[in-house]
Image (tube, rainbow, N blue to C red; front, side):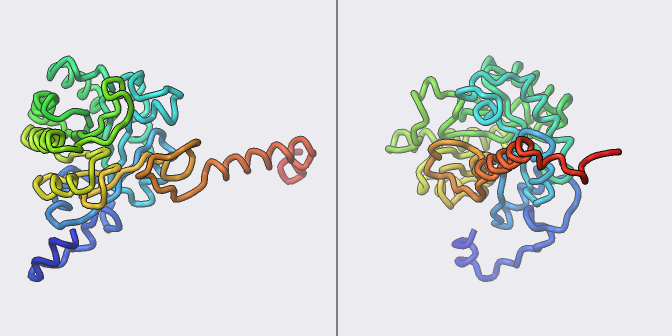
Length: 291
């Protein structure tokens, strides 16, 4: 991070060939690479992916970490929230993403109801994601309340990405998607949650909808990287739902989303052009026909 480097001019220059994004490596990225990036002060991007074709595009673009998020419930499966997503659905989606990639580290989400009963259920669910889908790591929501689950998974050899702050699976309890960590009591709870998941062995921590100043403080305090989404620029990494990032999502976007393309409009235009050609007799033309 820039401010750290400025305070320590003697810090050696990072080897750009080892960079998570833009590096020269071709093997699949591991959690050890993620830890090394934190040591180097390197920022890195993460995107969601839910199918082999899209995942292959992001993999070839150099995105080092892909999250098969239960956000698929909202943007691919037609659910109103992530709550209805099942473990079987996550295994199917994760398998496709793994098959479509060769370099990205693939993190599979544990959906609601697949780990809340306790560590044993969490291990059973995570084992399925690793064995049946081939993911490198799993992600689960919750801080102190999920520490025992994280600890058992890590002991079993399954890397865990934790997720604190706004946890979408708790939408019914939150009554929506409010910013978390505002006020001293809430900030203290977020700090405790961050320390608890790190101590339990999580290799990274997602901070969602957290005040930027608090997220930056937590990032400095932790020795594992933080992944921000609506948590300001002070995190080690940033993640977006790919359909938001690429302009595929319809309707009002959250404040933290920046759209880097307008794929929904482009895809709609392509569909209309195809339909017009079919109706008008321009497609298929002679060059599209067999004799």
